[in-house]
Length: 190
Image (cartoon, rainbow, N blue to C red):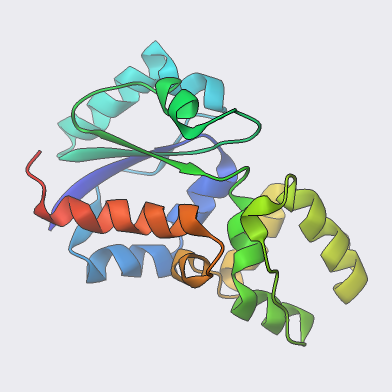
């Protein structure tokens, strides 16, 4: 089992990466989270002394790799986003295109079950504000207003959302890249 530490920028990422489905994916792929999924509460925190300290805490708990997940938001490119994150040889950085909520749009199976009708969003990662789009879809299909991102993320996870299904969507490469980078850790020495 390869032990990994995970640091994220927000509550939604933390909820997804602590879900039973994601923990099962890790176990099936020979990976185990050491410590807790650390939420630094903002992308600006990912290149601070606090980030460096949290990475060391995870290392001290046995993490062989530190995995960081953050949103691209409106940044011009992935390279600039990655440069805004604490760097170390054992740190792997993955970036969700625009916002991680685009991954929800990519999980057709879960949204079809929630909406009780076939649902497919053709270009989830092209959606500039996926959370806003999801709010519109919920009002249209469920006559339900999403109260906030944390509650919504928990609802998606409880209804069956998986990163694997998002990664299977042909137009959700950041979810696919995220899982690929995780599974590659099995064969890389720290």
